[in-house]
Length: 480
View 1 (cartoon, rainbow, N blue to C red):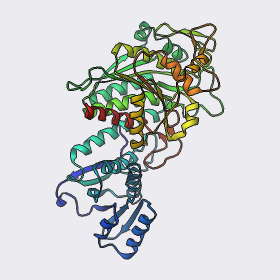
View 2 (tube, rainbow, N blue to C red):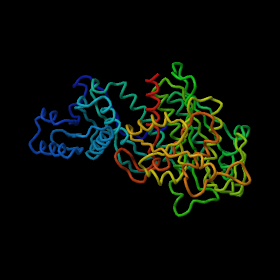
View 3 (cartoon, rainbow, N blue to C red):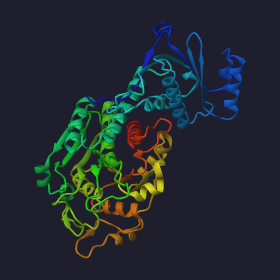
View 4 (cartoon, helix red, strand yellow):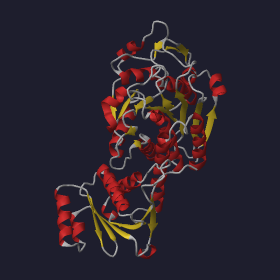
């Protein structure tokens, strides 16, 4: 079983006697009226008043017979509460607290409590596999059962474990996490979280004539895999599956259209879409949501060798479409296209693909959001609303028919490159060609991997859009 690299454990309790007397106190203050019920010292009251007057989250640590952490949260928007949870976790680590009891959650709504605890747990991830000295230590936080019951704690824990799995897959270097290892980890995850895995190897991929995946793999000594995840509970509310497709380029050199000027750094993250598909299916299955979901991840790296794909090559895709390769660094759309074709056999209700596909997307959203395009506007609108709440936000870009003209080729049915303008839209138009079902494309190039830690996000992988898609499916279960 993969290490989840989480350093925080929530423990439900019923009676005060269930928690050791030596445990630190955490007191959450969400209103001035609540603060007045405590006999705080005058200096502390002044700091609390200041935090409320400035609408500013504050964590105040006092030391005496035991550690006390006063968390002031005048802003109870869900994202502000996640950040407050992250600030509290940082304070617990700074004081090397091992055990604490959390009070004051009852002042928040159920959704607000969830957000606060989610921020704490998400911020406790620390990928330290290759470090001799570990920065963080385990912390147990006891929560009264009536404030946040055990089943809710377990749901949150399984979701964040799936998020952590996603982060770890992306953070691992390619000399460990290649296409074959990804398939091994996916199989282990299926056993852990409760879904079935089916792994197609090179001979089966050749039999399916997946020309895009095979072409990108030509430069690699590691064979490709095509990973299929099945989760179909007996009580599923949907007959036709939701199919999730993720780009699994384990490392991207750009091929012979070589990435230069330092742009190859962090390209282990080019499989973040594939990792997110695995993480999303794991979260849904782990929490036994009654929804039929299939995940598809074509996995390979994009490297250089004497036999590697070159520009001017013409390749034939799984559906028979011929593609003129004008840039070997536009490889993600080639592997995704075969997966989108494969998805047709499931007669899906909706297909959502996700990929670190274009630098153009990252230039638009930065690390602050995800570009979304597609032909299912109702679902786009639904995801946009959820994105604001889980703070994996979406920006819709156009799929104007004129963009298709930019993909014309004089020697093949299409080119894999659309030119210098509309990069996100032309890449999406390319993918749309291989669909005949309701479909959305999420370009996560900007948000999937970040250089600097902030709030509950560490530097490195962020695991977008796992939380977004989990909440999307969870609401579908409630609606039906």
